[in-house]
Image (cartoon, rainbow, N blue to C red; front, top):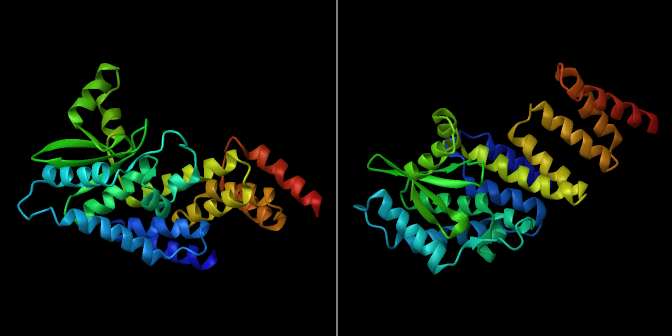
Length: 271
């Protein structure tokens, strides 16, 4: 995994506009699937985009381009949300999503965005609290696409009006519908996977996922702490001690200081 992780770290260090979201997501999958050919999986993504590009002409508006993407992905190719097995980890690995054509909101959004980039539609992921969405603009109007539910599309003003009716303040609504970076998308994808593995007590896979998170944010001391906890659960006491002690040095007045100190003492007692 070390080589794949190093390649991933190099990819996410690039400026966000140059970061290849699809390739980075496939590098995450390569940590789980050691025999995965990233080039083959990437070629499948290119093939899907090429099938849509054949129906896109230079004079098309953003909304017409979005319609072509939505029709091809969610009607012709039958990409859809996996409501029956939402927490199946395969829903978060892009290679599986491309083959099985099913996933969770953020992985399906990644497919939409990567295709959009290839056919000239400027779109962004939206870290909406309910679930991940996609948005683009056409003639000054914001349009929201829901990849999980067959690419349903509504004007952004409809969602904003609904939130206002529920009492949300305008600034909070703006935040909820703001676009996110590719790096933020990768972080959320990894956090989803980590949560799945932690719930399943699959500490080895959770630790691997944590390493990818640290490749994105190497000086996130909370992530260093979490890696320490997972290292302890997988039996790596020296590694756990190093991480937890690093966290203590930089955490300041965090609420979990006492719990971390107690864990450190237990790990030292093992030695």
